[in-house]
Image 1 (tube, rainbow, N blue to C red):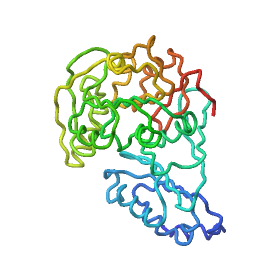
Image 2: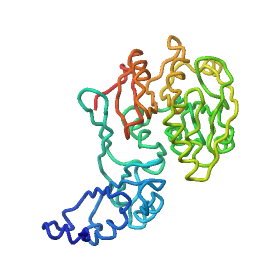
Image 3: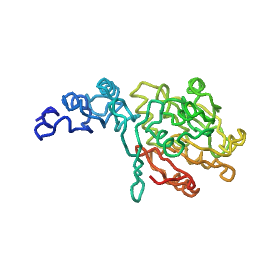
Length: 333
């Protein structure tokens, strides 16, 4: 037996004015459920929806359809999901809210509370750039960022805000040649068309055409699970995987050549090569206050390395974006 959501809520005595947050996880039937919310949807301030960008549930609504429908109802998306997971939306007239980035590591959970949601100026995949700005760099002038794995410099970019709106200087490092025209168009900082790693080398890179270029990876660091994801998503979106050689330089070489010793914000998103990038730094000559890494498969060695260098895990966003902060700067939430 099925029933409209507004009918069900009415039967339990809940009035529309009492509903602030609505969470829906119904395996592809999100739009049907929302359409059945009736007057209740008009009172909702925040929505959390499970969405997918490819068909997981036969006949289920895809992310693009859900997103379009929800936006037409006066909501704005404040988080995004690249493949499958939860999206958070807020009503446009809602100005203050909190949401949590949960540390899922062993030990007590810490919650990183955001004062309000990201405006459109922030492009980070999970709102992490807004969190870093508000907690550590609020109105800090003359900052320096280094973005390793910059892609096109805007899409899912957590360094974009700091260059464009804070007028920080820095580097964007990106070895995928198909991203470089857009990267040069979107960013004004120094752009280096190479990979970063422990030694000078010419590694092989696997890249995907189109918007899936964010999944491109150096072959030697490609986890089998990431390889499977690349193949599945490329097939689903009718994109192609192609391979080519790239130049790899140690990050220490790059920073010395650019005369950068003090980094405020180091972002590393290289689909499995994060530890190699970190090891390529000269830690005796270089400091970084905040380090963001992506870890999709629980690479304990990367986290152990950062902790051994005196970094504290500040927060985790969506279970795969980790924010580490130098001990001297770290402030508990």
